[in-house]
Length: 153
Image (cartoon, rainbow, N blue to C red):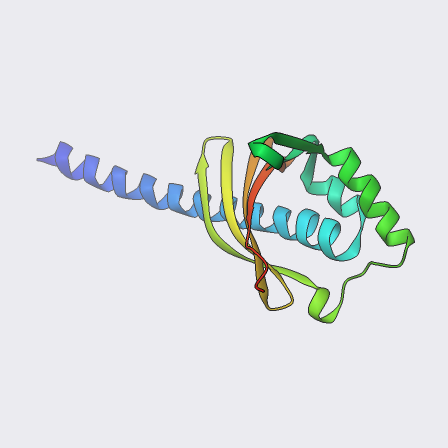
């Protein structure tokens, strides 16, 4: 009987610690996505913020014409972002400002996937699926796929 009580108590303590760690990891992932992707890449064009949370081998992956796959490396996306900033398109404000809501974050070991809703102003524009790995210096976004909602006519 003592063994059963001990195992029960040990299991409860471990699950409590695990739940706390999981919550901490989810908050770290939210911060990376908010800082690097939403603020850095989408709203401010801040290359330092982008680099803080997006791995240099990151790829945006999409479906093109005739269901062909395409891939955009982060270096190319950063070049486009830098050009937009030079052209005065950053920072975004008002109805052009991007925000997100976190729908789910699933973590297994050092791998995670976040599902987020992406808004431009108040308009839901995309649902993003962002994959992350945890490196010694923290979580980094490594790729993204998305669904774009059709424009209403």
